[in-house]
Image 1 (spheres, one colour):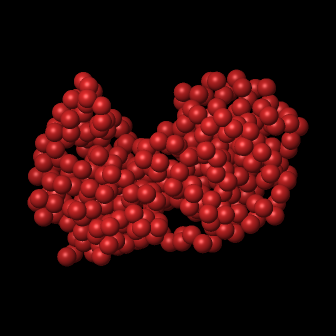
Image 2 (cartoon, helix red, strand yellow):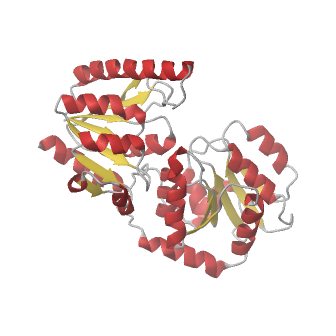
Image 3 (cartoon, one colour):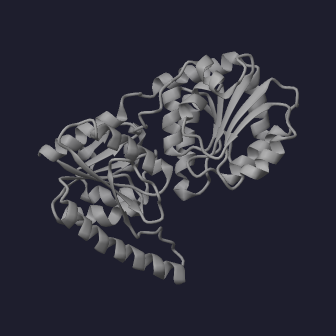
Length: 359
């Protein structure tokens, strides 16, 4: 069976695609191809990777828009060649405009199609591709409320996570960072491509806190802010582990008492898996996907939600202080995760894909 997986450039799309590829590779008799936008440089060992020329559309009329349209048409031609070369039995799409050329051409060729939506509110690509898909897989059952079409083709699988993300004992995780068990540990993560605004929000809020608090921080900041934050943290008495990127995120989640992050779909899935109390600061743009994700969490009692704005620094400081010495609140937030399903989403998706391929 030949399965073509197509996804966008961000970690929120690539990580679920990587998770399903890992699960598919455990099965016999399956050949896989991964298709990514040309702006991505991701490679997965042992998997054929191809690149197409798509770029995000903008509504404004300018030279960039013309280039984007040209790239989209070029991607359609590249997608046609890929389908002819690989001859897939099933297409698995993980949203974004990057999936549109291959999925629509596959539909014309009568190839079976599964698309996966990671967020609570489905994106424009998903809303479009519903019309061409045999199965629409969702991370959250609440997403069905936003979809008027294709309800008989919907299945709720969850959001696939990479196999390396395993819950560790807290002591082992703290030892990995050289941290103390008696201190309160905060994990700060801005998503796969980090977030300058979140980085600055946390460091400015941290400056409002007393220097003698028993805190230790793991901060995944990306490459652009690394030098700036390294200098800023030099003035703190807390023990801080600053990373541009951390591949061993299972240690970071397992060590933390509180997560401060954006509310991207993959981050949300990881927080659910590790059942970590969180303060979420959703990215306010991009169709407000993250705000909807965070509100779902907040309603369940798993997190505090802070909107970007003039009072964000003050609210984040107050939120950290409110949880720092309140183990009962943290425990209650931790227990609130029981309302979220923790099924093996990657295996759920694989079963749906194999079922499609056999039909």
